Length: 340
Image (cartoon, helix red, strand yellow):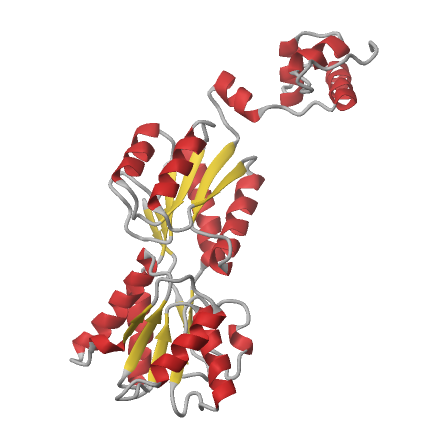
């Protein structure tokens, strides 16, 4: 092998640099590093040794541009501070990596304009596939997805857009079923406490409202809505405010477990008996909910299952395989514990 060569002024080692050091053509380097069987094993060894010597790292964007194929999937999710999306993303990434795909993650912060900007940036990298959260977005973003020709799967919903694909569960049904559980337990003044107020939270709110309206028990003063991000501290503050309401409530359905966990801690601190004085329910069955005092009744959402299923659906779309359905409903489970 020739002696090491000096990389160009940019400091980036190129395919041509590897070819010169290995004494072969750039196309041979490309084929050898892709693992094509047509390249003799001794040439593969020589190319890999040259690549290791120079510290060559393939440029996936350049490869996608040259071949029309990409090895990465663009994923747009609202946030990473919520364990819901962390669990989902880990499952997505695990399944995609098993099929040779990498993830390019964008955080939208529940901002439709930021989502549009991120999508435009990610489409420049020619992704093989796209995963987005929910259906609510700018019309311009919808057009970008439709016109890109990139296979796309929508997370956390069962309402597939026209010609689209989705994996999730019914937020409305989950909210209604938890409210019906509280009604079946004999609770009558059931408050709904929510933060963030993203579209999925509002669907849970609609389910709660529907269950109460069916029995003529809906009262708008039972809606406690706050636009701030969901947190333990906010849950504690909302609990204290709701407990001061007249006439008093006998149950509180929180839109997320961290709010409900904060409420349980506030109840313990202030001496409010749960569920004797007030029942508390949450949503998502986050880590620690089963360890609260008392353990929290909540809705278990199949976030890891959604991640795996969405990745498998997208892989099928990227590979041109027929799908059994455009929409996959993975359901949810009421985890009834001692807080109700």
